[in-house]
Image 1: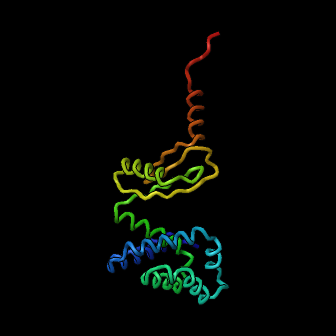
Image 2: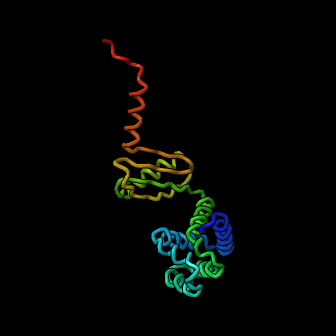
Image 3: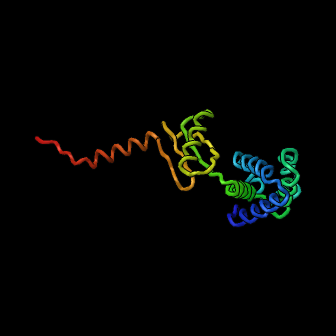
Amino acid sequence: MDNYKVSRNYAKALFVLASETDQQGIVAADMRLVNDVFSENRELYVIFNNPVIKQSKKVAIIGELFDQRVSQLSRLFLHFVVRKKRVVNLRGISAAFLEMYRESRGVVLADMSTSYPVDAEVISMVAELVAHVSGKDVEVNTHVDDRIIGGFVVRFDNNMFDTRIRTQISNLRKQFSDNDYEMKL
């Protein structure tokens, strides 16, 4: 089971080590890859959470997935996590590391949900808007949400811009229901 406190502690250890060896940017790219792989593959969570699968097999899977794609520091860290039987926490560890990395750089993460994939121009406009509001540099993650009919939602630092059609219709309903005008007969 993924444990937030364990994930934060491992991420903090990796962050300190990356800072001491001046490899924060490289390790951040590696952790972004780890986070993406674990986010996209639910089967990995099932495999790594299965106590029947031997530890050596789990090490081999991690090696096959990441050894050629990440730096030496990240590779050693990933194998360490597997040996400590915390591989099920890798997604949380990578997410916590990326959060610490963004904090240290003064970058805010904006999560944008749309009804269809958007191009780089729209993403840059949203990044400028969030940067103006937050006063920080912005990293934008985009997601396609089939439940959105039109418009988009952007979440960052406990803020939300909601331009969905559903929200606009709901606001209109509220305005009409609160209307003080009564027809005269």
